[in-house]
Image: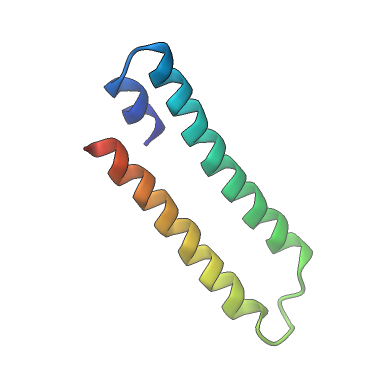
Length: 70
């Protein structure tokens, strides 16, 4: 995903674009992993909420991958 964006544009702007993409994906993963270790999964809707968040992060990653393949 990030390497595809970097290979498509070998300029400084391509490097900046790849860095921003990597940063956005890293922050999404970091926030999800922090949330997963902070909350108590035995509470009512926490499991469903975590599944919805996981789906959102997956869709964001797929959208970023689709954008670099064009």
